[in-house]
Amino acid sequence: MRCWINGIEQAHIDATDRGLQYGDGLFETLAAFDGQCPWFEVHYQRLWTGCDRLAIPLPDKAVLLREVEQAAAGQHRAVIKIILTAGSGGRGYARSANLQANRIVLCHAWPDYAEACWLQGVELKLCQTRLGCNPALAGIKHLNRLEQVLARNEWQTREVAEGLMCDMQGNVIEGTMSNVFVVREQDLYTPELARCGVAGVMRRWILETAPRLGFEVHETTLRIEDLQHADELMLANSLIGLWPVKMFESRHYQPGPVYQALLKCLLTEYPLINTQTMNRFDA
Amino acid sequence: MRCWINGIEQAHIDATDRGLQYGDGLFETLAAFDGQCPWFEVHYQRLWTGCDRLAIPLPDKAVLLREVEQAAAGQHRAVIKIILTAGSGGRGYARSANLQANRIVLCHAWPDYAEACWLQGVELKLCQTRLGCNPALAGIKHLNRLEQVLARNEWQTREVAEGLMCDMQGNVIEGTMSNVFVVREQDLYTPELARCGVAGVMRRWILETAPRLGFEVHETTLRIEDLQHADELMLANSLIGLWPVKMFESRHYQPGPVYQALLKCLLTEYPLINTQTMNRFDA
Image 1 (tube, each protein chain N blue to C red):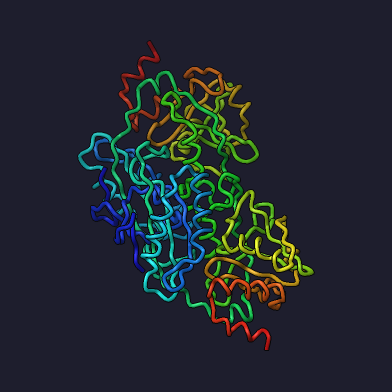
Image 2 (cartoon, rainbow over the protein chains, first blue to last red):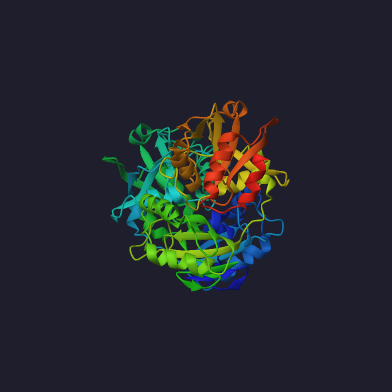
């Protein structure tokens, strides 16, 4: 792991940073392939939305891109995490007028996901921890992530890859680290995220790409039963790309044609796995 | 401002600290008088509750007290902030098995509140930012404080001392940095905090002390109208102690007998202001 703060390589931040004190900031998790983040632009756009919502100054795009590429340099595959905080100093919730936002760029090793995650799918667990609703924070990737931490720590077994989270009304919202898509008669359905949840960049890609591949996509209200009655169930984020769910609440699912069509399309621009692996679907 | 991390004076923390990454931690803000925190014990009890809820190991009481007293040493009045995070390292919401919680103890200058805050009262503003509800996080003083940050940054004018926050259903919950008490016919009413809000140590003191002074206290559901029809309205936290509200939503209030009785009692163990100041109520 390496870390740059405001462009300078260092491992420590000021203990008065508002990111630590209050979670007053945003983050992005990007996949880097051969030193490049192919989707930097969409991550930057979401950061723009988050900065606008939290009234944090948006970092200059060229500066941030340079820092991200500096962090990814020389790596075949890497995870780049950008944290942007409201700045350091002061005490109390009021931001002082002279705050300077801090950019923290971390480079982590690429996670060692098994190819079976893409080929056979993963097990999804229903979490007890719920998501609170607040439209002011919904959709953006802010640093207040205790709900996800509590949910993710509900299980330790490696067989379970992801946990599903509902809001207080029992509506399905998302996985702890991914967005959820249900397929029914070749149409896709995903929870609308106006009241809680994170609007992932891979989710956005599916919303834009599925119609081009001939599939309708609906942002809607989903219940647990909708997942149990799905033809296909899949998870999406910027590191896993797409994973089919093979088991949820005792029901078994198969990687289906909608998933396969989307993944094939994704791999043309996002080399998550060896494309030859995908040919095994056709075999 | 001075800062100690796990007992060692230093100004910086590891950028992989989960407090920064996810707000995965807790905090306490204590008043220190002449190098002592008279209410260390009740803060430690709340920390105990928070650690239990978030599954973070509770720091040893004697160790933490020593660090707090080290930070407060030699100060007439000071603000001691304890931050306890789940630890450093890793990536992703899952906590690794070998995490070690980090203790951050900060000593800040005592805020320069005017005596008029206690004598005449303060102006309270209604915030637009709402509190999301999550029983898993309600009551404890965790590091996910973006709602308070957004609410506190709704106003800049120094005339307004505090902002009132409601939940999504419009129930009054708390101030951005304080708990709220309504007095009606010498009974006290304060929002119950089972679904959101922070259960402050000064709130707890009032719940315990008011009955001893002959006042009934009710934890209940409060609406804006209940504040507007109050005989007295007051705010409580561990730095301000108690402040009467002099104005809220165009209504004017006076510091009343319930406030005065509570404050007099508080000052016997918590020297926030010169007790002679209080005599002016009797003049």
